[in-house]
Length: 97
View 1 (cartoon, rainbow, N blue to C red):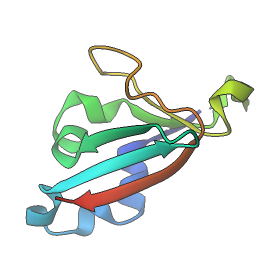
View 2: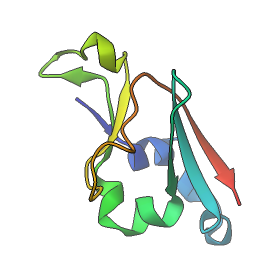
View 3: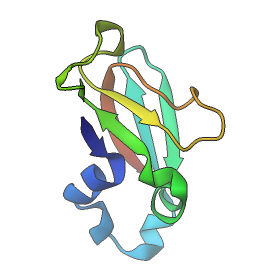
């Protein structure tokens, strides 16, 4: 169980920013180990990728396996799985380019 990253970003007010700013945003997710996954605003909100970028905290009603950490992030619609999967999600930051 979890939530879509775009829903979490919207709950924090990202979509209220002017569109001219949003087009220059990148979202950087960081794991406890320092690994990062980067998404453009356009990719998250205007492509099928964003529909399946998920922040997970449970699997089948139970806590995630210890190796995944308390919270993890997966990008399930990427053509090549793995590079944007984070264990132990510790931070999500929105940066302007």
